[in-house]
Length: 137
Image (cartoon, rainbow, N blue to C red):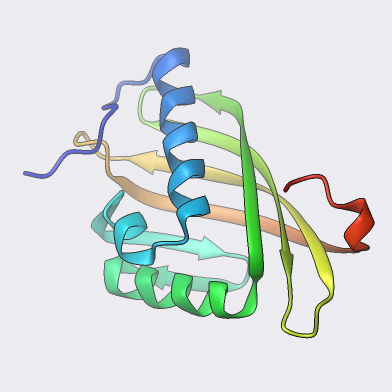
């Protein structure tokens, strides 16, 4: 059985490690690699989009980064329990027209015993920004 360290139950230290690994993975913009952190039947809600399973995760992320260029993400610890982690995040990106945005949001994650994320619920808001106002580079 595949495992993704660190495994639950989470401590404050291991929750923060899991968050950093997620941030690093998403900043790599490698959908196939990122999908391996999720269970085969993982369920997502990302804004108004519902995604189920690794194949849909890969497709979703490919589409995302075809439209969100120069993407940079920062995640921060919010809370955790044995099998769940909550984070707040912000990321910046540029659309194909060259306009810059900063997205703010919260994610709730639930993991299985092998450390694979089985549920991800993300609430996200976008704010138009000027390039000079970027914080994440």
